[in-house]
Length: 143
Figure 1 (tube, rainbow, N blue to C red):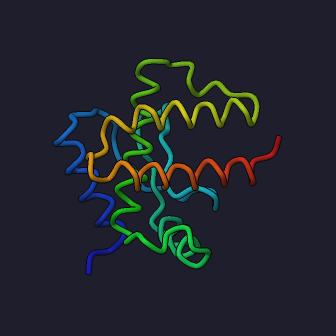
Figure 2: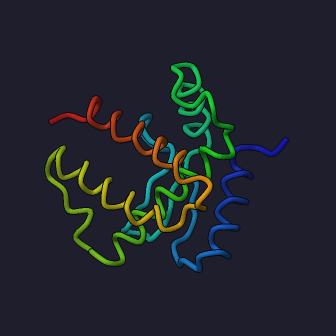
């Protein structure tokens, strides 16, 4: 069985071949609420394998990810972050946020970009994945 780290790298490589994006992939420790982020300052998707596993396990425990394998969650997380990458390419001010509502709008904008990368047979599941993310931000982010 592949490690989480290997799955992330394999999925990233496949997406890079398919879509030709230029952002890098970096492994670094992240805050407990994040398993992956797009860091516009270094043009990289940053991931934390431990946080990926913890978020996945928590999602399964509470029913949010019961229908998904970790490979699909990793794919959706990478596509989600690529949406932020593409949003940033079009709007360099996309990450200039000062409120919870601006943060959620930034997420929604990234999700719209990401939908362009999702295989048609996965759109429904990807939308559900993103709905879960938005709900968590609305619930957990400070005003």
